[in-house]
Each structure stands twice: as C-alpha cells, then as structure tokens.
Image (cartoon, rainbow, N blue to C red; front, side, top):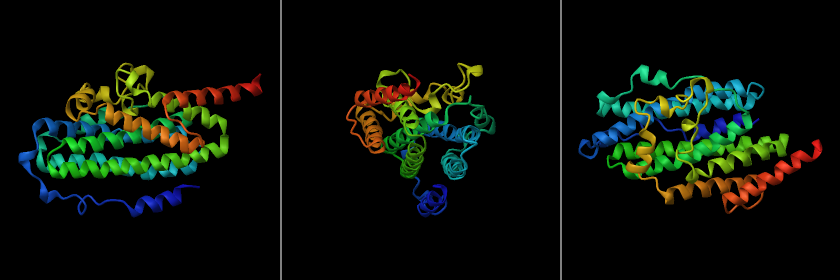
Length: 281
C-alpha cells in the first residue's frame, strides 16, 4: 500500500496559507485587471477537483489504496482554489467566484477506464506544473507570482504520486497497464496537433451534456483558457516541448525503454497492443 508513505512524504512539504504566503508584500501597482480576471478563472478551474475526486472514488471502488490517496489529492487541489480565492478576497474582492460559479463546474463525469484516467491525470499534473510556472513568470505582482510557484510544485508532487500508482499497476496487470498508459501518453503528448489544450479540464466527460461537458465550457468565460495560454502567459512551443519531454522521460522510466519522440512511444504502444492480441489469436 502506497498511501501511508505518500501521506508522510506530502505532509512534510505541505505549505501553510497563513505562514508561507507573503501577503504583506502585495503591490497593487503590479496587478492589472486582466491579470486578476485570469486568477478568478484558475480558482474556478481548480474547484473542479471536486467532481474529479467523485469520479476517481466511483471508478476505483475496488482500490482502497488509491482511493485513500484521494484524500490527500483532493485536499491539496481544493487548497489551490482556496488560496487563489483568498488572494482575490484580500486584493480584488469584486472578482471572488460566487458559489453558483463554483457549483457550475461540479457535474457528473461518465464512467471511464481507471488506468486510462490515471494516466490522463498524470499528464495533466505535468501540464499544470508547466502552465503555473509560466504564469508565475508572466505575472508582475510578487504575491501571486509566489502562489503560482507554490502550487506548481504541488502539481509536480501529485504527478510523482500518480507515477507511483502507475508503477504499482504495471506489477499487477502488466501489459494491460502498459497499453493504457502508452495510449493516453501518445494522446497527451500530441497537443500540438490539436486545436484545444490537452488537459483533463478541457476534455469532454459527459455525453448527455455535450457540448457543455468540459470544465472549461462551464466557466464564466468558456474561451478563457486558450486566450490565457496563447495571448497572455504565452505558453509557446518552447514550453510545450518541456511538457512533451517530461511525459516521454517519465514513460521511459516507467517502461524501462527510451522514448525520444512521441513516435517512439506510439511504436511501443503498437507493440504492446500486438502482444495483447496474441492470446486471443
């Protein structure tokens, strides 16, 4: 069971919202209305950890270890939403999300294969780590720069925890897990080929609500994410390459094989798929 060890390790590095955020260093002259509005959108997006946790608990009902870890993940992700809202409450109270705005991003996700979902969220944590690091560089106000840096580090640690559960799955179900992880890895590392950013909050998750079944589509400004990435924080090809390289590096460690490109990973995916077909043949 990984939960006890992960609890101890994450408890040791947990930050305190009162003591570890330099609230007294706030500089109003360095925060624009445009920047403050993006903080609101991120606060609401982070709130969607609530329906994601409900999905994880439902779809992993047979895995008490991973379900227990959700208590840590959920707490820390909701804390991200809370610290962003606290920032707005202190310095831009007119932009604090309403309860109705938060409620709107809580909706049922359709059941999905647990291994594919785990890999998708692993890649999502890597992407968020880089988005928030980029956002920290874009912002000019020192307190929010610090907040984004702190929560980006949380996302990296969450990715590391997910990777531990992925390794555990490999030891339990072998090629079934390899097939699931490589398939989603190819998808999530191919963001440059898609029109929209590839992150769990921007994927369709409830067929009955389509097309309003992504977290981003239910924000007060549904088009915000693309504008934030492309026109504001400028998450360009250099940053995207960092995300892809990080996914490929971790897949190389996971599968004990070197993947320099997405094409390398896709070839491996096909190999695993062929191995799974042989017993049936």
